[in-house]
Length: 465
Image (cartoon, rainbow, N blue to C red):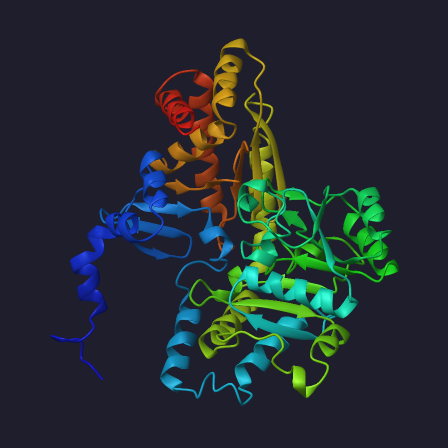
């Protein structure tokens, strides 16, 4: 062992010596467009530490996190219960990943997950959301003996090749063909689903109960009727709960908002990690797993080298315990309802604000064409350069002026998505609504720094064509 002295590894010393190079290192060795993009929109901040729903910079300024690492930080950053669980599992020096034994932690985490999913029986653990979806696609094809999976327009299920085949956005798919022979159907369109099922080659429909891109919930009754149609044609329903699961929408799973919906396969990840150790899980019915793992010869027909590792399993068990002890799901429902109601009350006040929608703490704020001539001309200028610029104009002052981190909900969308840690409360709701109201006032004044920044974005968009 090393004491971290001369010649040894000292993390604190390394960060102290090289931490200031963070953006330069990324530009030189990683995705060079990331620091370029962050600099362009003024997001190239230096955060020193984080806890719960907040970051702090070197000057001690706090920043409210309404993004939660794209949903990973469900119970907030650096929750002490999860941190202790990881310290404990490291100190235990378990004989982990021997590959030829059965450790207790995976079974215990599967058991705990399945208590929230009483119609499901078994779990496969991988390392990410896209792996969870890949597992579901493979299992559905093998269990049904059919080749084709249906997905919805504008869906997002991951970026590995199989998951990309059921990705409803061309911007992610372009240049990566050939993909699997899967087929898109419009979200909520039961007639389109029925037509595809009549061809007899559909293994499953994979669907987000609330689409992350644009924050579009499935229409009432759609999931239940889709499930009935699928089962009638010997096909499966796959619920992608990678972002919506584990309490995000005010129920443990988003599909539980609709009575009678019992997906055959469910994908979770993100928040299960506690923000520390990547983990993904695919939950399914017993008969599906028994078909895939039909003999001892097929025992490793689908596996993951780091799946079920002790650190990930400990983090997952700690996360679920925190959710139960702190009633995280109920808080997401109550706080989400409050935030959505207060934002929706602003729609009639601001003509650029079109709609507020979502469930729990997954909220979409959509902007639209204003009615007044002065604002309409400015809106038209932005739309002609690139759709989505106005939403970006809102996101930037929320961070720069009000120290609140948010995101535009997708490329070419005038929608901001709020997916904060599920631990936020009334104080954070007050802070966000006050900041958002201030930004809307600036936008409707027709002048100032916000529209100056809009002109900068227009020039950037035109230059990138």
